[in-house]
Length: 111
Length: 114
Image (cartoon, rainbow over all chains, first blue to last red; front, side, top):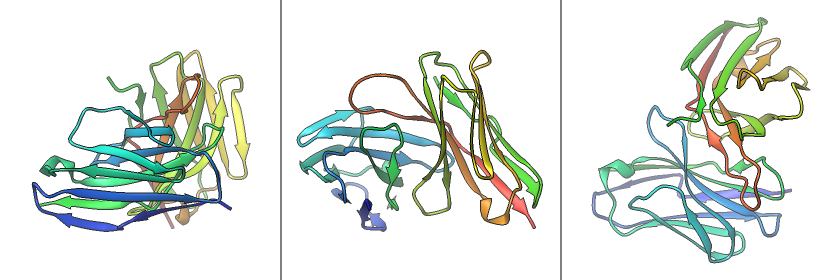
């Protein structure tokens, strides 16, 4: 069966510090991968998606970037965090279907 | 411009009764709709979906209804149970190759009262 992992589960970072969140998927090959953010009191906002290694599409101009160094690994990064980057970050995967399956999420607080 | 709208931020229902969660959309190109359930501090879990060629899809206690002319869909939960208390997100997607991007509503928080 497929599983998706995200770490860390929670993170508190000062403004201006770098960020690296990692997501890995097991039990499937060539998945589409996604990064979402849920800010307080808001819905799920798609940040990036990837249909293959090295292929990244950005949905929202922002302070963040994404990379996919391996087939089942998706990384979300920032060189300098802003207060507005605080939120709940979710990674998701899909394979040949509309249904996306989400990881447990990372709660990021920028102070 | 919000293309998927869940106009009720919260809903309270007595255990055993029906819960009805509503969702409206503006993009007529949407052709597939999904409902997700989310508990606090967890990722959303897929619940049920419906294609635009259907008007109803049922899975156990959960039924989704789609009214294309009104651009409206609803999720019915019967009977409601305390464990159903969560935030429910409606999502939609358009046809196209590749990534199957989903557009989500802001969610409705359902509270089922024992």
